[in-house]
Image (cartoon, rainbow, N blue to C red; front, side, top):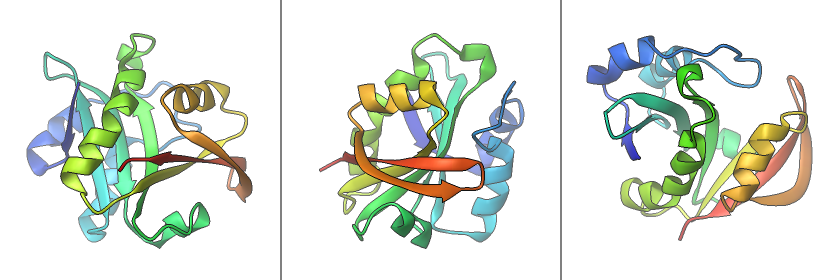
Length: 155
């Protein structure tokens, strides 16, 4: 797996990204639009060995992270998804397993990655817990129900 920060040369890969069900996430194109005006919003591509875009997410340095943590040196993981053409092939697990090293390289001051996951999204919760995110025991009410707050130390 290769993780890389999005740049304009990746637009066609992102525009071909297919999500059969985007109930719990945002389409990458929508997050790219946000990142144009928000320099703290960092779209990230996960590419397989053939350079296919298989997973996508955003690392957000903005103040929204403080809904999840008091840690200043943290990033909020948002809009994680796997292209529907590549589901159930282990790409999501490999992507999240690569996250800590990627964060250390691209954001060396960051100590923690946080996220909120809908408590009904059991497959996502399972993914995050098996890739060393920890359940903080905290929940908050989001737009689509309660969100479990999960944390991962990266230093």
